[in-house]
Image (cartoon, rainbow, N blue to C red; front, side):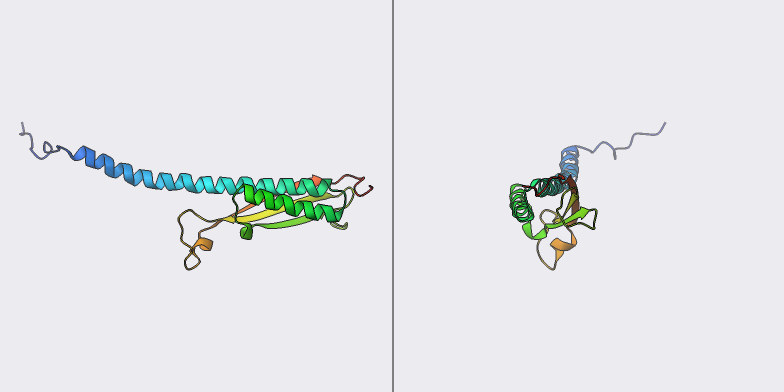
Length: 151
């Protein structure tokens, strides 16, 4: 029978150090992941709300001038409410069928909102915030009434 080695017995006090080290190594990336996913989710919900509400106000407006004014007001409100970067938000409005003016009676208004989310704690140096940003896109469609613009 072989004698027991003393090598495995001198383990006093190292469990706490290992626990703290492994805890920090796992906790920091996990906390960063939660912050990043929260920022992406907030901006994605904002882009979806902006597309949906903008399409709705364009489709329900009385005329093209009020549709444009209301769409701008709704977009500014949603961008402010969700804390989005107004400079990073791009809105595209189109109608189907494409042969008609936008908006027009019976057409379907399609609003697409594109934005970018910068990762948390990335400094605005050397364009890093742009290189590490995540592109997001949301679209919404609204049918315009056949009686649109009739009064």
